[in-house]
Image (cartoon, rainbow, N blue to C red; front, top):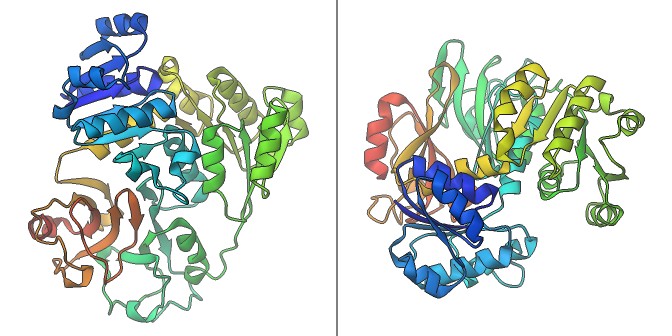
Length: 449
């Protein structure tokens, strides 16, 4: 695959390394001649000192022949302009890194459509999804997320006293944003059907929107209490803002410690439901005053890696049971295992690494991939990319005959995911998630691709 990357910062540099190592033909354009020269010696890619938002420069690197154009500078306007020019000049797939929410706000105009950009990516938002997974589902048996946290799958056990016991699946009247995938009963696991009857002790795999899944917990176990979760964020960064949105449910009590008084005011006006504290979390005295040791989660997510590591260690020492840290620079990659195994940090995430992983999946040309395997042989979740020649294009979900033992659990259209309804139509370019038994995989792939 021919890929052009604009910008050699932490994100662009890491993408260049990752994608070229995967065998892609990568060209990296960096405005700083000095930076480009140093990268030319270490990268297995074509490095060019130039302006990625210049049409002449893009023509010179044969942008019309590239399969993917990635604008990854730290400047949103440069990225948007570069992608728009690249698309106009013939690039097949354009992806722009953005920070400003202006470009995600479609209330007045859809910027993505207007500028002809295939995907807008915010590394900090992707990073926040990784952080939110453990916070939103602390007692999970198994949890994964798809489409940047829009769809999750969870497992719930049917407890004694649940009104679900003895009922058929078709009679449960579940939230339409939720779908039951398979049921593990003793040692036997099978994909659920409309006539499947719930029994006490069943372990049920559910797919759907996070809030809708959470609301179902008490139906599976009436004795399950909704516990308030205390979360403290150090730094009002973009990662923190994305994480606040993901934790908008009333059960999350969020406090943000931020040094800048102006940013404190902005955060408090923008998010009325959170508590904003003006202070420096590197101060042990402040952490003690705020009783950080008694909160459930402490997340250090400033732009300063040294401060993130220091405050995380202090929070862990004070007794916070779950500590998470954001590492922005590649220089600290080798500390991951030390932070987790020796220093008690539960989750370590990196915006650039999370973005590279996301990009590899998004740019994959494979017709399908295995996203997850359910425990006890409960099947696998496949992501299939629907092309124009697929026999299911233009058909509704109810009209597609899937093999016995398989089930549609999510559809992703233009990077927006949803739980499929019977009348939803499959379109070329969609990605569908299907739960399937291994024995039926070949038949499933044949019918859909």
